[in-house]
Each structure stands twice: as structure tokens, then as C-alpha cells.
Length: 267
Length: 168
Image 1: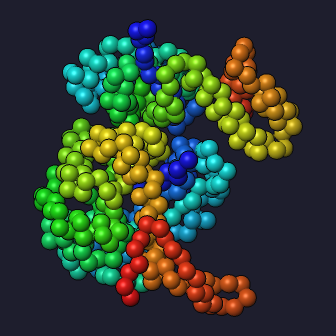
Image 2 (image 1 turned 180 degrees about the horizontal axis):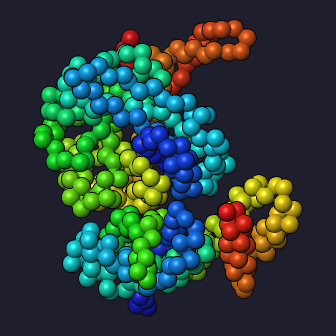
Image 3 (image 1 turned 90 degrees about the vertical axis):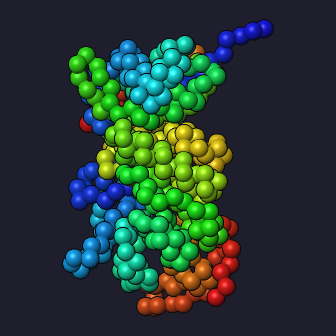
């Protein structure tokens, strides 16, 4: 039995809405959900990166996942919509509070830099407009080598017919260039009714041009790879991690974490 | 020797308000599925949908529905199901979505899966009723009496809907 994850659930200030979203996700069978804070910096004024509300405040009691015995895991994620290269500052301290980092590039040059250089886990492909640039094999292969995944979200396709066309068009373009590897499909759901079950999403992947096996991977093992990649990003390739224990304030533990989905990075 | 084969899709209708579930009927669900397929796959999809599609079973209390499709292109029609956002029934629009639980070749296999699924649901409901002894006893009786033949399935669904209504 594979774990299914939905790594994009939009944050809303309404607590009850988030609660019902997480409960529906647990009922549908998702083992992990990531609450997404979208941050769109503009050059006009200096904006603060939103800090994530701790999970225990947000949702009181984590519901048990359908078909399993563990409660659902809820993570924090930040998406930076980049229209200029200065918008994303690598190693900024505010990013430390989030478990996952994502970038949504809007121009071709930015797409190239994000794929090759930026230290993120997920690159979002926008679905609300026809992509102004084409995908080239070189940056996409560079991103695949680094372990970065591309994300397609489907909630806007459920709302509107033109959005549906853009989603399918952009997704098919992406699948052509990346050959179906390193892709995740997630909802960008704002309400509980915009979520869909994992097997339905797997079938939707077939609409986007993925094969059956690739489609199932897009909801399960590639998502797990993203989580592992995020952990290694936080902990210097997964070799050293610090843990604050009750007895001492800071304790350095050297443990070897070997994420199966990642090659060792030269330090 | 030549046997007509179909695929039966076991779907669960999720609504935000449980009382809306009771207003559903099978013709409304069939109509909305056909409309969604026509919207997504156009005339080709609508034509395929008219071949051997029907709603075989609908349980308004739990929201379980069996859809039958032709074996050759059930995947294409299945891919249109996530696009259903609401079902219109007797003039009312109920916002909901369909979640596919199981695909089977016969109704019997789908029923077996459904019984296991309902048993699991009852097990999950059990810890919620720690303080209410009477309901707990009813759930435990229903779990023990599940079987493929006879009224086992019906007893399950009665328990399910009465517990859900108590839950509100």
C-alpha cells in the first residue's frame, strides 16, 4: 500500500475551513498534507514573508487517515511567485520555518535559473494562463538531476472551462519535455469540495499524458522524494541534524540519514 | 463463451452537509455524470456514455453509488468524474464530489469490497462513542453481524446512517 500525499492545500484564515479540508483529505486517504502560503513579492513596497501558524494552533485534533492507523501529517509550505530574480533570497532565515519551499517562475530566464541554481524543492507550473515560454530539455534535465520536482495543480481546472484548457495544455507540454519523471500532481484546494481522491487523480494524470505507473508515482513516491529532499535541504545533505532535547538546550547529533531518492551531494 | 463484460465503479459521494445526501436519486446522478463526460470529452464522450452506462445502486444514506461502464473505455469516462462539482436534483443544486473507491468486474466483488469498507468505517466510529454505551453496543453488534448473504449489509447501513445522524 503506498502513501498518497497532497502537497498543496491553500492556507485560509478561516480555521473551520482548514479543519474540514484536512478532515476530508484524511477521509479520502491522504497520509500527508502541506498547507501552502503563497507569497507574491512586488517591487513597490517591502513585504514580509508570511510566517506559518503552528499546526497545533490551526487544527486541534488530527484525524486518522482512512485505511491506516496513523493520524494525518500536516506540513507547512511556502510558494514564492517570482517575476524577478531578486524576489527569492536563498538561505533567508524566514524560509527556515517552512518544511517545503516552492517557486513559481513567470519568465523563461527565471525558469532556467530556478531549475539550475535555486535551492528549492518544487517548481510550480502555472495553470491559470497559457505559458509564455516553452520548456527546454536542458534546464528540465538539470532540475531532475538535482532532485527538484515540477508541480501541476488541478483545482482551477475544476472551476472553469478555460482554466481546464490551460491546465491540460501546460501539463501536456511539461510531460513531453520531462518524459513523466519528477512530477507531482496536487490540488490547490481552498475548500473541502475541491479535493479529489488519490485514484481519481491518478486517472487525471493519464489525461495529462502520463503513463499509468508514472501517474501513480506522481501522487505517491515522487511526493515522498520531495519530503526527503526538503529534509536534506534543511540539514546539509542529511548528514548533520540538530535536535533540541529537554535536558540540554542544544545537542549536536551526527546521524547518517540515507534518503533513497537522492544522490550524495559533493560538499 | 462470449460474455459481455463491464466495469463497475464504486464511488462515494462527498457532500459538505449530510442532510443533502438524502435528496439524491439515481437519475440525477446519471444525468450529472453524462453532462460532465460531455463537457470534458465532447460528443465522443457523450456517445460512449450512452452505450452501457447506468447507475446500478445508490444508497442515499451513505452516499455510495455503483456506476456501470463498458469495459473498453471505462478509463476515459472515469477521467471525467473528477470534474463533477455539483449534482442537480429536483431543481436543487447540491455541491459535492465523487471519490472512486474500487473498480470491479462484477457487482459481487464490489459488494464484497463495500462490506469490508463499511466494517472499517464502523471500526473508526467506535472510539468516538466511548461514553455512550448504548450506541457502542449497537455498533459492535453490527460489526459482528456483517456477512455477504442476507441482511448483513443492510444492518450495517442502517447503523451507519443512524450513527451519523446522532453524530450531528
